[in-house]
Length: 103
Image (cartoon, rainbow, N blue to C red; front, side, top):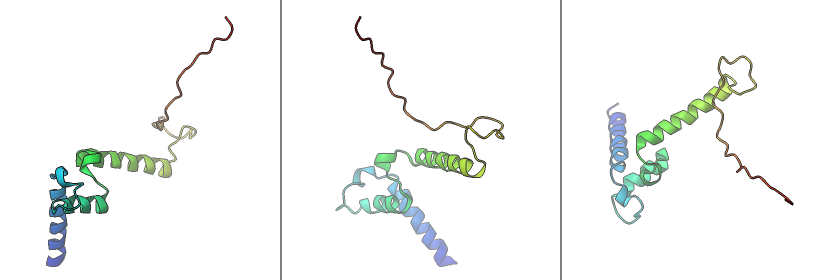
């Protein structure tokens, strides 16, 4: 049990250290880049691309919630049993262009 808790504490320290050192994140030859690279490979988090960890975690939880709603309660526009309309997925709309020919 001690070994498991010490390992979890060491991993927590590595992930915590990587959140505060973005300057060495992309420098492969610097020793301070190791925690940042480990957190990227294990958790998929890169501070220089994703910003603060809580923002990325919130975005990930939002996408997980949307996926679970769609799969478990059939959250789509054509489901008449839903009490309210679900959020529509983002689709960029094409620009509105008007053509006038031969005036």
